[in-house]
Length: 72
Image 1 (tube, helix red, strand yellow):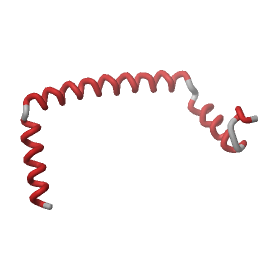
Image 2 (image 1 turned 45 degrees about the vertical axis):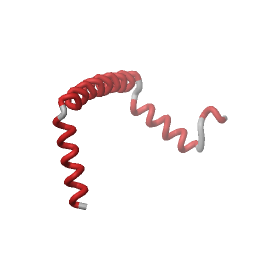
Image 3 (image 1 turned 90 degrees about the horizontal axis):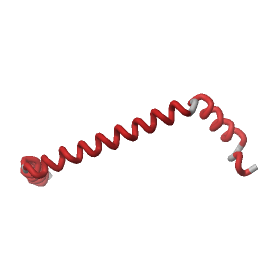
Image 4 (image 1 turned 180 degrees about the vertical axis):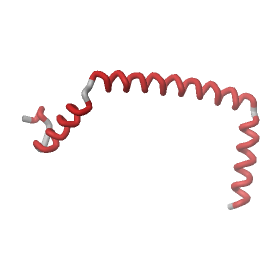
């Protein structure tokens, strides 16, 4: 197992040293960062619109009543 680990680690170091791979990693990190920021902004907007206490109460009420309000 040690030999396989050494071979994989060596291959990883060679790939990581490749400038093309480094450039692609930077581009990917930028895209992911942008998407994460957009998603976080959407979550914050949604949280501002909804009152977490009321929503939790509604969910608890649905659970306690044994189903969904649409089924009644």
